[in-house]
Image (cartoon, rainbow over all chains, first blue to last red; front, side, top):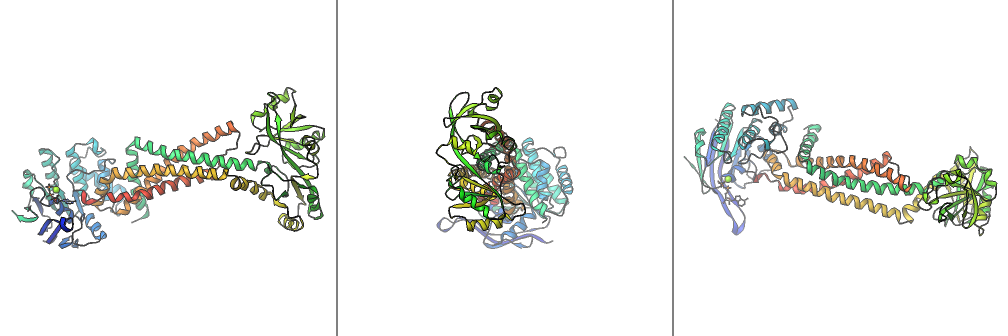
Length: 225
Length: 389
Ligand SMILES: Nc1ncnc2c1ncn2[C@@H]1O[C@H](COP(=O)(O)OP(=O)(O)OP(=O)(O)O)[C@@H](O)[C@H]1O
Ligand SMILES: [Mg+2]
């Protein structure tokens, strides 16, 4: 099996000079294609920081971060944009565009791919929304949907582009127990169908059962469980 | 990436975000509309000024015109000897020449007996120097002593002359000299004169006893039909005295317009008003776009995290600016059209809404919005995808 994410000796600090605050210390982790990895750890341990580096949202300078065969350490904007386009994000807040309907929100992922016609985009987006159980809510805007429904739209948005990796940061934090579990189960099912790699940060021990592997980040260092 | 998708997708997002918040959209549109109306009115008044300044020469029927070099404009002429005009007859291409006498004088309202200044034109009733049907028809009648024609398009302060004439009340005074109004014609008011009177050269001298037939204000030259106007102009200007200008018809119009545009401060005032309108509009549109980006920075950061490039958001901002320009211009145009009609009926100034004027104002408004967009894009830096998790 090929490595999708291969991180070696990653060091990262916020601030500079006397105010330097090391957050990630010598982090080393490899994730295979199709693996579902859950990451837990105390607050402030650097989980979010780690995800933003993997996702090409934050620049790191020391160590090695290979994501989808691209080196992200000291990378150019083009490399980061390329990596971002192959990753699906699920944020803690759903972060949907509030002026767009569910269908339009999901289509936004596909608008970057110019090989599709508009009709193909809408069909794919509608299919994806059906898969997350929102086939009846295609033309609803975020403020007409519940928090759980919004998070499911954002799962559809993350997966519709058939990303190689899905990164999720506490996707269930703003949801109640049932809709949280529902959302994660949908995510697991769809990811397994398409062999998508998932790296998911959570404090929610009720969802650990979907994981192939659970790692813990503590004080900037990785521990396998 | 193909060009349609390159601009269509960001434009569509900009449009969807614009129409989502209707209240804000209306406020934004009003800002552009305001600037639009301001610019339209400034342009309208300015063009009315130029058009009316040139309204007298427009109806003059001649190929070349002599005017004293010190005459800044037709309404404040400096006299020059009639012999100067007669000398041009020496050129074989010149068919006829006619002098025109001009003077400002108070006209007594027949009804209220209040006095108000208007422009008096004196011409040789044998000539056809005005291209106005009513004047041509009344030429013989004007040979009678103390008869004048009154411009129906004069401001209403001179009285309802048409009705008064129909009622037989046609006697009044110009410069305290008793005259009879024997008919009407249509010329139009200008910034220089609120009304016009036309009479024969001899009657003109009776109204202005300090003037004489040998000191003329404007010389009208008509050439033989096959003569080259430019060539004759060149020949004559080398023969004539230094103190006269010899103009073609177009040059005379331009001379009048230039007076108002450059010598009089009025051209500058309207230019300044236009710039102020655009600056106010610019500030409003900038403010709108800036707050819009601030409000959408999380959405933009989300899209960036998904792989959208920075240039995509620049296109979104410019598309918003473009839509605001269109949305503000359409009602602004209609509103200004109404104001133009109002101005025409209330202050008797010609205020036509021409296609080129509408186009000019639209380009002003469009550049205003685009500049505002250009100034607002620096705010896009606030959309940082690292803050999204
Ligand atoms: N933009 C920033 N500038 C400076 N310091 C930061 C910034 N973001 C995070 N930090 C610091 O880095 C450390 C790690 O933060 P991070 O958000 O990665 O933790 P986390 O594991 O995601 O915590 P939580 O579980 O509470 O989300 C914290 O001490 C935090 O204060
Ligand atoms: Mg966090």
